Length: 254
Image (cartoon, rainbow, N blue to C red; front, side):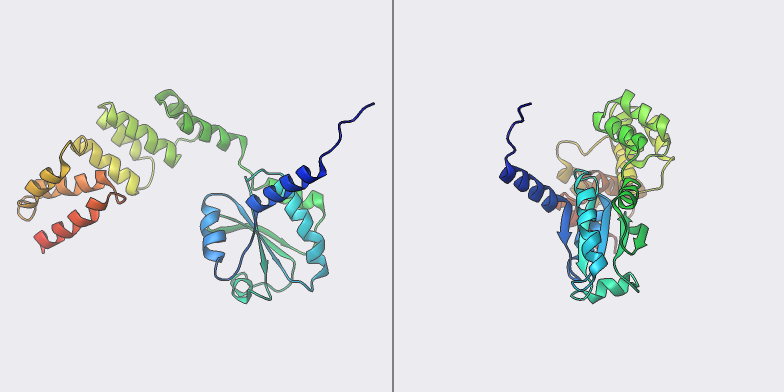
């Protein structure tokens, strides 16, 4: 049987690129950004090791292999505890290798000591999104009303799905239904924005002129003050005008 020749250099390049996207050498200085904040987007496995630690050198390649195979669904942060003592102290490490899994800025799993590939695989598999979560994500990405309704049939209080459907309903003029939907989840900047959108109908063509007119009445007129605040909520914090108009509102009130 003829076998196509393997391009070894290409294989090595692919493996190196995969590791670069799924593995990072983290320090005390970069831990907050590369582990805590990053774990709010994707699960991060923290491998605490040291150069003198024989079991660490056995475990490290296994972690790299298993995590690389997730194709970015899980990432690996390797931390030399000798060079970065603050992280070790934060985890209260008593022995290494010590491995922790983080999601949403919190430790959700972990183990100490060298483990075989099967055990590491089970550990990493627990961090992968379930089929149900993946289906919800796909439905939210579709973004149409039927898909969002289906997502909420799977999880009635899924924050992202609730917000997306509520905004869609408000845009369609179904303000009461959209606002009722928001009651399923805790208040957040997004729920406040949609509530404000329902009350105002949007910022209009010349929001600056509207805000300037309202500003003359905000101190004495509660309705004008509420509309002013609602318009700023709809503009959102990323719009540079929001901070400027908030300052003007504070000056007018106080």
